[in-house]
Length: 357
Image (cartoon, rainbow, N blue to C red; front, side):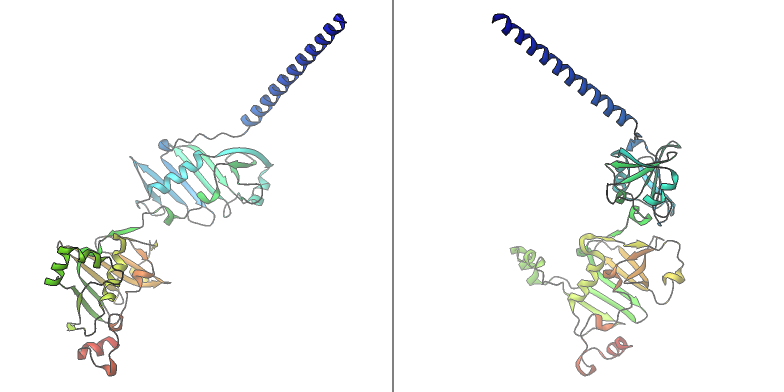
């Protein structure tokens, strides 16, 4: 019996040893296959701080060329020297840095069009360092199995991870710095608006003794934050006082260009002539904001571009396209600031008539 038990023990030990050996062999084989599969995929090494040139052509949008000058990026094409937003550039660089290749799903240049990996359908991004390309990638469709891409001088279509086509689907305006100016509405003390219909001048009324007393008790601050509160303004139209002036309408004018302290453009009118934009013609509207420190901020509004307007600020040749908020103050009449008087009375004579012309 002792011999039988010893024999059974030896068989169990040998069986366990064989099982562990096979398990180790299987683990080693899987690791080897996985490593081989991984190393057969393309590898990109993108170091954002070392890249000094980006060329991006997204579908049917214009090509964008960005170049690094020192620590800053600027546009070389289509608008040479235009300021760009650094965070948008970093988004592109980091998007390619995170990209990895998972699998090859098709092979052959004849397959590219079917996956939107050709001009007009795909998104082509090239990153360079010192004149040498460090990444040359096309992004195509992303439906079904995931994001598809290809790289230059490779006939394979790959399934990729970590990067998505929408990150790179950008037009030139998406890189541009759209800030027009910084203007605090509380810094505005008077406004002059001039167009073909006449000239408006609005002046913010000086604080009264009652206002001063309220400020001492803190009540003025509370009133300033009241959504219904409005600054006190006086106004003239072609030199005649405006009866029934609605001060909140003047506030609306100021807010359209100074709300939040920063005015941003929606787009740009690069390459357009004054005839096309109306910025040099009689139909232009000029708005001058006079500031507490004696300075001025001047904006000219030109022709409409849909619900927007072409615009140019004093001291800058850039043609901006401003949204509906600022655009609505072009070519305004007297009824924009004062309710029409009953029986054409109540507005100082000629001013009322002029406002209707």
